[in-house]
Image 1: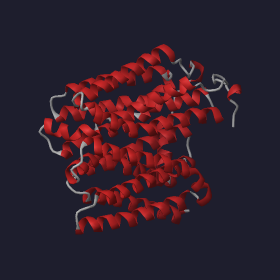
Image 2: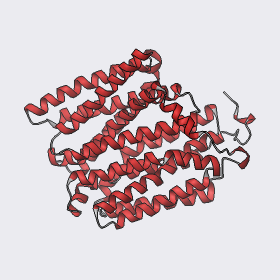
Image 3: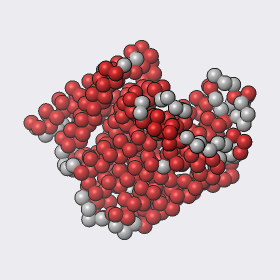
Image 4: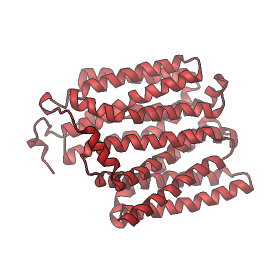
Length: 401
């Protein structure tokens, strides 16, 4: 590994806790924008005189904006430095959050959520690039691990915070709070965060389209990217339908099902910590095939119960926790395998991986939003289909290898 002290423009000092918190805060804007308003979705549907599927499409629009902005934002960062694309993205996030709070129709809300997702992408993508600019090796890993920890905590805290804040304000107030978070972030960047990519290190990638074409022509990269996208789909498709499944199907309050969603997120965070060791012991393909097969069997059992009787809440919660644990075990080996299979540069591969991963998630969330949300069976069908596709993709990759 290259020593940061011998790479021009990189900081050889130990990463500070303050810097880690700042990077973590910037990266958490997107997750908070996803999870904070989940408890408000049934109330939004009532206020907008819309069905649950229409409100769920606001979540899909956010995912789509988050996915589409990654590649152009990375290109702008390489050409103009990290700070100004980051500041521009945060400004878009603030404007879109304010517009969401003032939206008068569901169509406007969907459009503004798409723009909000594009703005939120600036925090996540720019932070990863800035970490690579400043540090390498163990120091970079320290910052990245802290950033992932903050991102992992966000799905736990945000729904709970949203359920409590709804007792003080409306769903419009939640979007106003997100705009305020963006203002804090942009002020912190302007005052405390220096440029990490000096002009002499900036490059214009003339062969960007060729690089992405080579990646898309690599079966292993495409296959593992599909698996990574479906792994991300599992929790996000669940949270798209969960507010309505829990409130309508199980008659739970927003606070009650927010606690269950937080428990699911904690389960996924714990399982993710075991993924590297299991991957080293079993190999990525064997690990993912094993846990996906377990998920297919569990999903078939839950579907059978749902068709014959009312679903008991404890059984559904155990199944939900199993799904989130399996998603945590799949995502790390899938993402690493996709990047290892890339023939082009790591930056291009990471950008394309993130874009395709979130595009798959947005598509699956959109499918969930089109299905009824009164029972668990439609959601279970989508999740079971995702696991079947994962197994099929890995079988094809195994035959090619």
